[in-house]
Amino acid sequence: MPAPQRLLVVSHRAPVEVSRTPEGTRVTRVLGGLTDALNPMMEERGGAWIAWAAPFTDDVLTPAATGLSYPIHAVRLREPEVSSFNAGFANQVLWPLCHMFPTRCRFQPTYWTAYRQANERFAAAVGAVAEPGSLVWVNDFHLCLVPGLLRSGGVPVRTGLFWHVPFPPPALFGICPWRAELLGGLLGAELIGFQTALDVRNFLDCVQHFLGLPVAHDPACVQFPEREVRVVALPVGIDAGRLRAQAADPAIRTHARQLREAFAAEVVLLGVDRLDYTKGIPERLLGFERFLERHPDWRRRVSLVQITVPSPFRVPESREMKRTLDETVG
Image 1 (tube, helix red, strand yellow):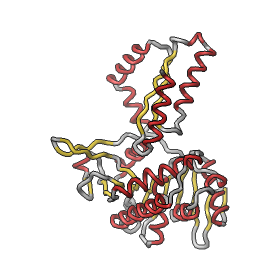
Image 2: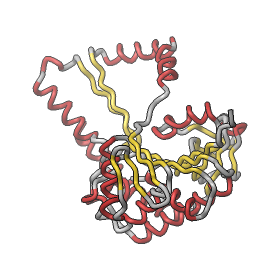
Image 3: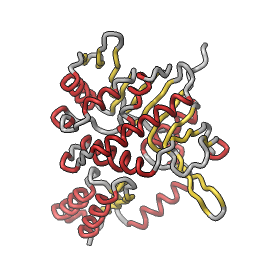
Image 4: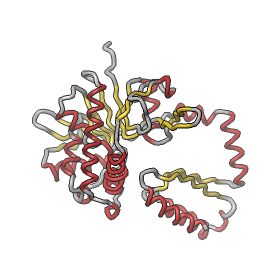
């Protein structure tokens, strides 16, 4: 049996954070959907992770430094680039566009320039690390252009991209001035994955409408004269076995019982979200209030616990929402 091809995972942020302390350098694992989804697979299969890592002093973080089983290769971005690429184009253009908040989009040409340049840096980092035939797994809307840059640059790898957020329909995606460039970058991949069949359909409709390329729906693909790009709906999974084992841990079970006793409620509703306008947290609180108004017999029998974490890249919106939540809960 031939040896498995080397896997390179590419994402805008690393699965660890590096901070400076009086005692030296501290490395902590990042908690989040993308890291939680990909890290178990990387631990089992091996490979390398390529990501932006601002405080890294080394080009490579070794397993000895992180406690992970694979190395992390750092992509260098200067601070003005980070602001316009990530906080700018990714989070003030693509994020609201994909979540159907067009009035929050800020179509700044400087954002686009920084986004393109950052994607070029990521593609160059992949080219420097990749071996012929490596499998490159690009993640999310921050890196739309990387597959196309790898293909046009002749990097001898096989590339897939997974889009972790919703993909908008043509009527919405069409308001983006750089829609053709974004679609062209994505189509550099051999395989593009989305969370739902609706996202697949929206993407194919955009490709057909804005690029005029032939598409098929069963199986879903985009057809070029010399190749085709497969498009699939593959929802991100979880490591169910690991979570089941954690839930069965005696210390966890004891803590869970203590929490239930502290709330003294038959039912505890738990929300854990970033402080973001797409999460519907104010609506959730108002919905809970309305439920208690309509069903007074549930008062003191049900508790809602809402945990929120500020979004590092949407600071103005986070402040605005925190004020709204503070006013709502009194």
